[in-house]
Amino acid sequence: MEKLTWSYRRISLADVPVMMDWYNNRELHETANAKAFHPYTIDELNKYWQKKINRTDAIYYAIISNDRMIGRVSLKGMDSTGEGIEYAIVIGDPSLYSRGLGTEITKSMLENVFSDPHLRYVQLDVRQDNKRAIRCYEKSGFRFLDSFLENGISMHRMRVVK
Image: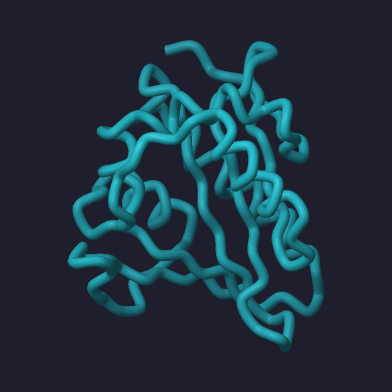
């Protein structure tokens, strides 16, 4: 299998049309999200991402491979101490699943964020039935904290500590 090269950059509103396919993919949504599925219009998704991009407590990155956006990563502040952040990754192209890309990107992101001397941990929530994502997170050092229900969906909370 060919090794994929990738890079990342800040997300912009110009990326919304690519993400629209992901947001309107019911199977991807029901693998990665505990919220109820509803399809977006381009105007709705532009408004949604305008708010996200303007947040001061979060950074969103586009994952780029072969000059196209294949996924995204988010890093969000969790508390006022600055000791923890919330992590999320979505690979939007199903042909890239189970190739180790999510693990490689997650490990790289963790290395970058843990260069901040104040940051002690990175935490995430993942659907209990999303075995591929859980395996990615475990290989990246995340460990199980607890389980909970969100909108009737069984979720795991996981954390990696510096």
